[in-house]
Image 1 (cartoon, rainbow, N blue to C red):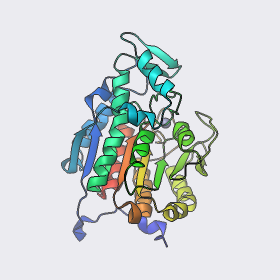
Image 2: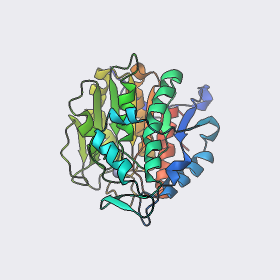
Image 3: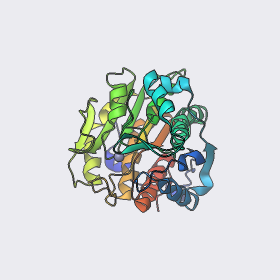
Image 4: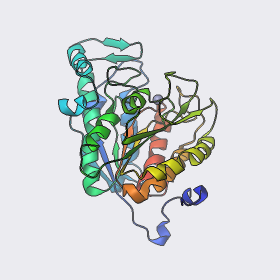
Length: 325
Ligand SMILES: [Zn+2]
């Protein structure tokens, strides 16, 4: 039996009880700052502000910073069709912009940033399998709208899916749980793993909303516009905990978008920063017995700079079992 949800929601660590801080590994790369489209909400400032906030936070001393490698062709090809990979390399411009859809454009530094973002997640997997510590991939561009054959919605490669596919190649990794709490349905991830025997996607998202795609996972949780994080928490407790525990996942992934925050300019939900801590802690606790700390979280959306930093700190506090100020 799972412990009752209420028992899971207190801060995971009471320092007065002498609990140990679990260090955090952070995977990123300066190339991820170089993809810049003027007046686009998915900006380098998102990552710059977040990194500054992390460096100044209560987590700073416990962070091990690692450089994300670029994804290899073999890693990309486990998820993406050859034509898609070839097209992104062929379209990458030397100057100006190439628009792939009205929201998604490549400039000269985009391909490298996208390769770093996609390469960060397999590297995070390798690290967490050795050290059993959570790894956060602070990368951009995001990935969860990218399908096997299509870039869209600010996304080029499906970073998380590339990491999940890499993890499934590793001995002892048979079942993977993916949590996607971005305000938008992660249609790319959903399509890539639809019907997959070893990967279960637990996705909550504002509905109806962009991208308006049909949800294929049985663990889709539509949330009405204006609803808050406590409503999401109740729904997650009611609908996800039992199947999450039953599947006995060997690894837990977060597709961690923070655009459900009440301050976000794109999303229409009403989550507060601490809701991210409570939801993340609940899901960590529900899977801890079988994942044993093998947790990879990958940044997706989140477009209010201050709210993004606050909510990421709240999420990472849950991953590391540290108190959130
Ligand atoms: Zn989003």
